[in-house]
Amino acid sequence: MKVKEYIRKNYLFLIFYAIIVTLLISKDAKSFLLKQIISTGFFNAKIDKKTQLESTNDFIYTGNFGEKKNLKELTGKVVFINIWASWCPPCRAEMPDLNEFYLKFKDDERIAFIFLNEDGDNSKGLEYLENKGFEIPFQKAVSVIPSEIFSGTLPTTVVLNKKGQIIMKHSGIAGYNNKSFIDQITSHF
Image (cartoon, rainbow, N blue to C red):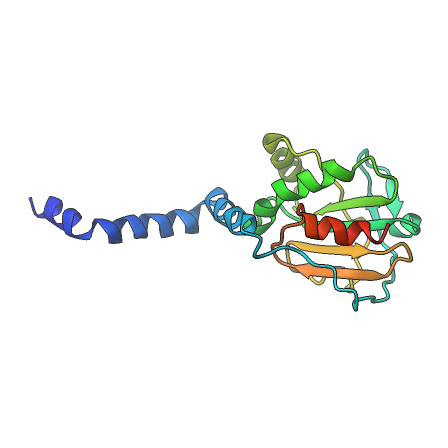
């Protein structure tokens, strides 16, 4: 009888507690909540016209089929780089948005996409993409990524202009598949 009375008096607290515990335990619950926050537009990415940092643009990564590529080979294109991991809730939250953005431009020769996975075990990243039905390419850095591009925070997204200059660097969660960002990035084509 005391248990039922306690539940009746404290049901809001118990629900709140259950939500907090779920968010602490479940990567999917965290990423769902963060995805909802992204959808508000509060975390939309922005290319600042003042930002034009020089980049070493010299690192090697594997392409879709394991072939090695050098970032320098992409000079002359706008380059969208996203560094992510399957265990990272903010990365998981922005992945549906990134996938939609990628699908809009994947056949456009003026832009190149590099999605660098930071999972220690490739199979985990590949499994995540496959299970969610994402079509972004699975790529891995083979050499050290310059600190101008990646300083260790996941997710990190960098946009390079045609000259290879960094025109945007964003660490943390953001939305990219929105009219404002699309207009900004296409203005650099």
